[in-house]
Length: 215
Image 1 (cartoon, one colour):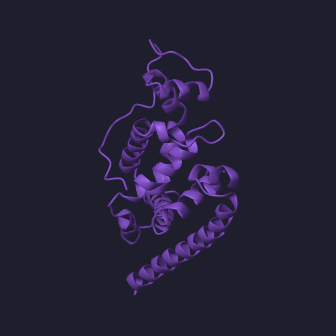
Image 2 (cartoon, one colour):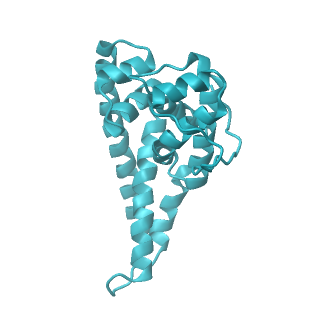
């Protein structure tokens, strides 16, 4: 299990001066295994955006997503000798690690929902209040997904991430998780059912809360 990540800033844009280029990820990773910092920087540059996007999906919170992203890459460096490489890429391992790190954040991600009933709705088209409500509604949906993923077993959440959101095949996801493809398919079916039920429960709870507040 991972502890709460320490806030660390890893700049997504690295200076080009003094940094060697690597033609492909396997070459960069092989060099990184030999403690080459430039090679690891190339891996970071290549995968930062997708890892951050998944961290944001898991946390629905920008500062938390930044912490989780930093922690995932620190884990990649610390555990580089034992990382599972899938089709020449460490990204699946990074995404699974991001899922695990995010699940350990003890933050209340549902706090944004309380804003919905409090904000006024303007009668005129596209008022500032309308735009704000739309953005918070988008955050509400993102938070519901994050909450649902956190309610699942870590392996199930990782499967949903790799196959449904990141579009890896079941064989690739199985390799990343160290299980058989048959087991991955079985768990994926269970995970998708769990996710659908969790989202339905969260949506129903939100609707009930709104109805009570409107009375």
